Amino acid sequence: MFHLQGDRVDPNVLKAREDLLGTTSPSSLVYAALDGWRRQMVEQGKDLLSAAIDLVTSVRGRLSDLGLTVLHDEFLGPDLADSVDPLKVVLDLAPLGISGYQAADWLREHQHVTVGLSDHRRIVAQFNHSDDEKTAGALIDALEALLRAAPSFSTPPKVDIPPPHEFELETAMLPRDAFFGPAEQVPLSEAPGRIAAEMITPYPPGAPGVLPGEVLTKPILDYLRSGLEAGMQLPDPADSELKSVRVVAKR
Image 1 (cartoon, rainbow, N blue to C red):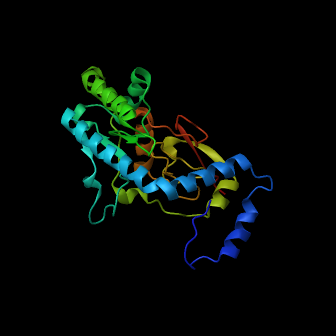
Image 2 (cartoon, one colour; image 1 turned 90 degrees about the vertical axis):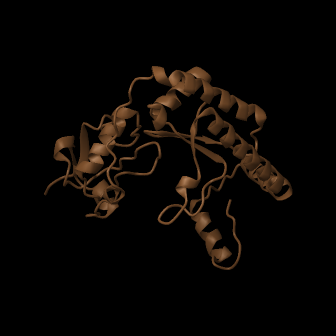
Image 3 (tube, one colour; image 1 turned 180 degrees about the vertical axis):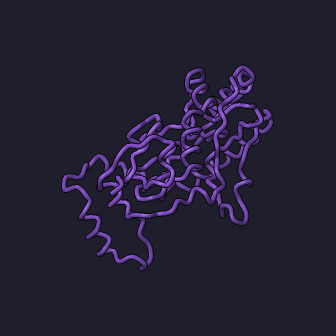
C-alpha cells in the first residue's frame, strides 16, 4: 500500500514500478484487510491513537514509580533524534546490573511477555491502538516481577561498543562484486583489514554492522563477537559463532 500525496512522485511511474514487483495473483483477503485498516484509520484513527498515547504515557509514569529507568526525552536534541515514537516504552536496565538480553529471555520464560527489542542494556515494549489496561497491566506486573528477580541474575558479559564513528566502515568494493565474487573463510583474528563478502547484522537492532564490500576493522569485530557472547543474535554470517568471517579472496 502506497501513501501518495502531492505531485513529488508521478503516480503513473509509481504504478509502473510497482508492477515490476507486484504479484499477478493478489490475495483479495490481504487487500480487504488493508482497506479495512485504512477505513478504520480514516474514521477512528485520531481517537484510537490518542487513547493509545495516553495509555503509554500512563505506563511510563507507573514504571518510573516502580523505580525503573524509563528513557524518552534523552533521545532528543542536537545531533540526536528530532522525535521519538510515542508508542514505545524504552527501559534502561543497567542500574539493575542486568542486560536487556537477560531481561527479555527471563520475561519470555517466566512471565510469558515478549518485548519488542532488547540490547546489552535496554528493552523496548511496543504498544499499539489495540492495547488497553489489561495488556498494560500484564506488562507492568511482569516488569515488577523482573525487578524482584534481577538481584539473582548473573553479571552479564561486557559488550565492547566502539565510538559511533567507528561503525562507519570504509567501502572498498561494490557490494554485489564482493558478495558474488570469489571468497574465503578466515579466522576472526585474520579478518581485520580484509573486505567483507557477507553481511553481519546484530539483532537487535537488526541494522547491518557489516556489509559486503566494507573493510573489516578490529573494533567492529570485537563489538560483534562480544555482543554475540552477551546474547546478541547474528542471523546472517556463514559462521554463526563468528569464529571466522567470509571475506573477499585475495588475488
